[in-house]
Length: 561
Ligand code: GLU
Image 1 (cartoon, rainbow, N blue to C red):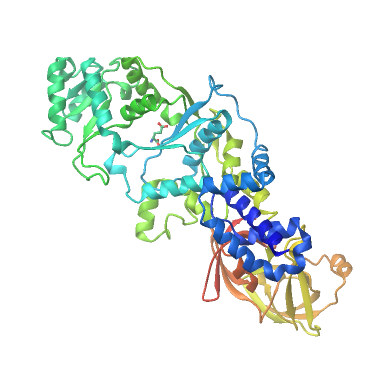
Image 2: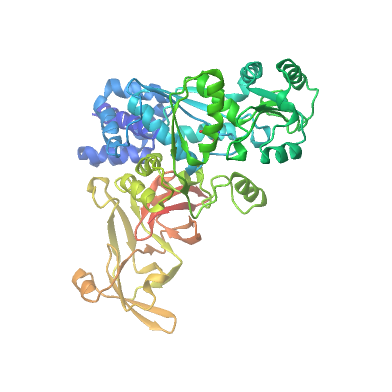
């Protein structure tokens, strides 16, 4: 019997871990097992320790190991996971993708990933999953000024959280010699030249559609200058390699753009170099060398696509198929890496996961699940029209996922303490989940001294305390005098009494609910301490992720209503 229960917990722990691509959550595993196998409800006491044991076992495995084991011992549970994925809507086909694709996600390690990155990475991921193939993570770290050494790790964590199916990882800073090589070849072809003009001077000429004196220098001299750049004979800003484009191009920014430059400071955290490719050059070279077949990126890269095509043309390479989706405005959160960093430094934000930021870690902290982000991004798709990101849709997608799992508890914000006159001692049994009786109940006992949410009783003459009884309220100025008014639901209905949450004064924990509009102080049920890192529903308040419990104080973050 024990073996059966342990096995069940084990396979659901595996399923939970594979689903979220992280260590399994014991609460969720227990919930699922008891939901599907009510026959074990009577053994609820044994389940906790057993679940702890299997969760630790699964937590020690890595992603692929969990998946293959689940496939072997409970393939139907693995199928369940892919079935839910397929509920997402179908995006348009990619041109020429029938035989598989090679795609890439190419973030700069300048900070953790945010919702903007989520769109790019999830859309590419979606198509790699759909057509099969490879998904390259390319860390674009060739601008020493925009590299945050800590971001390398954060980017990987965020990718893991999103559950992207990355197959290869490439660091551009490991490939400087590759870019140097192709730069030399481009110079040899007459497709690039070393420009030693002052930036101002070049700009003036460019705006007048005029060539700078360096443009017509013979290849041999350019190669020499290029070697001198590599040898460190020039200082930052003194020399740059330019791609010969079209001086008559209507967009001045397309005219003879820079492919290589010197950066003396800051020093790159990974490589000892002073010559670095600019994005368009390294992106074009890598997209070709890595065999990228399709590129999905934002419209803000359209001009870059134009620049990169020159490189493909010079070398006679076949470019990938490009798609550019429209801009996505995201309101209510900070997304600019520099503003975030500055705010963290000055103490305005608590860290990269502050709830006011649009980073994935901030969203995760609030209890938004990666699958909700994925579904919301697939809903948005890759239309060219500019749109505003819908938080409502993200919340709706998250609610679909957390509502069935989240246990219910009372949280009383901004409480008033009252004694209900004439109240009998009463035991309330409130369901942990209204649609899943198998999870059982929370038992709240009171002889009449309770906490009530101030805002919900103000101006009221009667309220019903959920799962308890009705109370009548008489107002003595600002002071409520509360008395017992029976248990009849009928009475409550007739008097249009709202049903509100409450807590026994002698069984409660202080709880801070962190929201984007500020912290809400209140109290919650002591059982909430068993829900750390899970999402719960604070009845009538909203879904919240229980972040931590410190010295008997609970910190929770509001996800959404
Ligand atoms: N690293 C660049 C970015 O994150 C390039 C992306 C791309 O070429 O799609 O904006």
